[in-house]
Length: 233
Image (tube, rainbow, N blue to C red; front, side, top):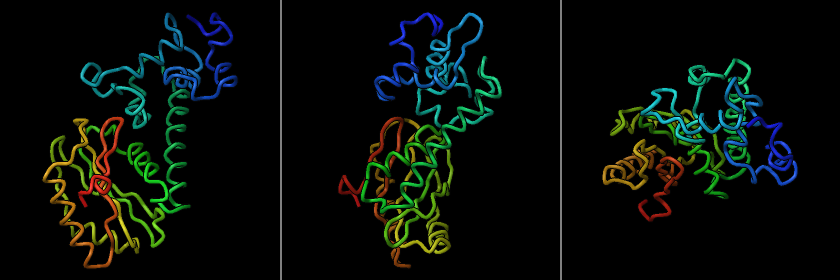
């Protein structure tokens, strides 16, 4: 159904202005960005279908929800019927603004004043990647963010992490502390024995240059686990 045919209080724009953005579904928020549908498909239907494309059905077009869409590139969106250059640019711009806003928060205040903000930032950057990525948050002496670097990439099941490279990057950034992070493309965030062993290896290596490992966060679709909170550090 076209938006103009919906009751005023059911139209996404009016609903947002009256009740706030939290009252809208993911599809309704996305529909506000898309603005118009295509012939034979209203904008709400188009938004819902875009969010629910499955990777195994649509290959690189699939997003599996809002988390997957957060990592879409302009090239990914180009493969979706009905998304012209203007719509693609707007979606990519909004997603990048979200990442930058979260990064700014972590550069302006101690990261561990808000552990949930750290998890959300890592989810925003890692959760929907289709391959395993090992990343490091480099922090200053006040635990403010200096940089996030994706340091190693692997297959869907394993990745090789070299402590020497992590130490060199910590020295480069003059970091006082780090938060380790990696994603599990399978979706589970339960740490493996290999994850625990890697954490201890990196703690020992970084300890030699007086850099503290504050946490190791494992990110999956829609969730993140802190090994520090689990008492595994």
